[in-house]
Image (cartoon, rainbow, N blue to C red; front, side, top):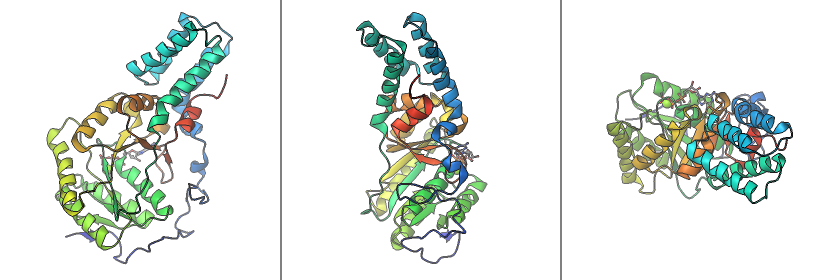
Length: 343
Ligand SMILES: Nc1nc2c(ncn2[C@@H]2O[C@H](COP(=O)(O)OP(=O)(O)OP(=O)(O)O)[C@@H](O)[C@H]2O)c(=O)[nH]1
Ligand SMILES: [Mg+2]
């Protein structure tokens, strides 16, 4: 049996945010006014640590008019590696810059800097592919997966708010039945966003919670169902199998579900995120990625490696713990936030 975390009244199909409850509405594609101070902070402020590690030090390198020589190329290489761009991706970038220099296409450090900027933007552009909720899918199901503490539940809270503001009715499924506090954490987000949460007791079968939730969401004509899952290490085969089971159980109701398998990665884990992406993809066919905690890490360069190595759409980036700290990923904005526009 499932129970709702709050009253069982049917949610209105087009929720109208009420001013008292939603003091922190974020401006988004719908033009809703953004009222919470942190949401107004420019991305470059939010990505301060990575900008300092990569962008500002890069600008310093080029600042004094200097010739393009082996030393400069090496320093660029070191900076990219320090920012966790990764060995292979860094090598590709440096090789291509060297080629430009050799061909005399890049004659001065300003041209070299711009070439580096566009290389970085080119790496991210192919993975800029925002999540689109298919209105024909009732509900559109998003399964959230990732390792322990990556930011899954928080991302669900933020995402629920964003999608609700976009006019969708939302339901959450407390598929993390492993940790005692997990259900409560999700219910808190549910209450905050005024969206129903389907849950069972701790220790229940996660697939059965998701099954109940999907049945309930269909019965109530919910637009979007977001299912939380317990954190698991990508190396724990039995737990990875459990995720496949959740998918199999969903298929019994609707073979098209889940429409999105969103892998949540902690931006601070750097290159290890690549292994996680590969393992989770092998287990549950990841269709999109959210990278969290980019506000507190100097490893923002990992997105470039992630883009190059996985090619998976990066849907969102998390830049803080609050409900509005989830941004739709945009390649140009990200590069602009990391690197100054010019020297
Ligand atoms: N600074 C910052 N903190 C974040 C962000 N996203 C999540 N967190 C914090 O990271 C911690 C873990 O977040 P959870 O959402 O509980 O992570 P989880 O993946 O659900 O964890 P498990 O359920 O234990 O696997 C919490 O303290 C969050 O507030 C982010 O974008 N920035
Ligand atoms: Mg969680």
